[in-house]
Image (cartoon, rainbow, N blue to C red; front, side, top):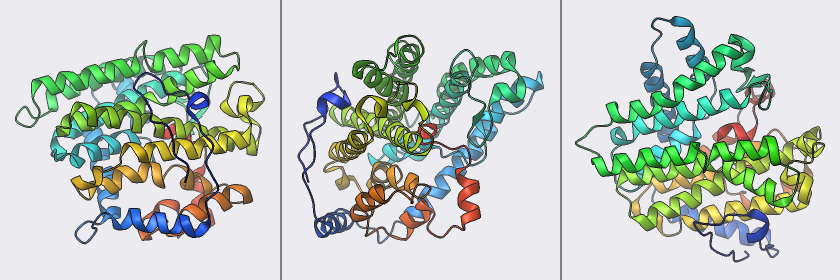
Length: 382
């Protein structure tokens, strides 16, 4: 396994930081996975039950947070995107898992987790607008503006953004989270969605993305990496993590967020050309082979940031899984005709357990796979 330079708080450029990995035998990969899995006791912790129950609870709380009241149409539009069937809920899951990793209570994290999903949904609604990316589908259904109209989609997004902040302030138990940490969470989210985060990435993507390495790296970091960075950090803040641990969570979350985008770039290039034709993606600048190497680099860096956090307990596995399995392998099951990717990833993850097989859809029928993958790209997870 290659050694990677540490990710700093001020620089996260894929092209500048990447160091090619050395060749590793399949046997070495198997030893590595066995060691990492065995390092955490799972005697009293069912990862699959934890994950599915958490998503179910998040869905329920989101449903309760946005009831349909007068004027009904705007709430219907908000709920349409927020409660879309099959949404993966990676930002809120990462937030809650990171909070529990450091000993925080789930109830302390749920309001922020829901707020992250509200803000995330709002950004996707606006991102799909004709004046932005002009996307006609999102999360396996027609995009919000295609269903409710552009005017209502703008209003729904505008409403979800502040609702998220209000939800944090009004719903977070004051006996579980200090005012100082609550303000830190609000600041973290505001930074992520504003002119220093996602908005900046969207602007460069629209107006200044000339296909150069600097522009593409900036868009990946800001437009796609900020939500993961923010989600992991907020969980750590709510759980009582130290400043150093919170920064490591930021680095981890950003790596995972960019990783999701990178896998989607590769998917588009392999299947139908995607942004490679537009000259605006990482693949179009560096090529598929370099992009695949960068995916490995990002995943390794995400794991590196979690080094030694397993001492905090079983929730470590849930956080780790977002980078270790759910990113490249989840995508692989709908791209399993790619012999080159299959060779790389199945060597790495030959020892997947029952829960990971469930995440990958190993026991799903072809019809279920096709239905689950319709109109879903990896970038939608963040």
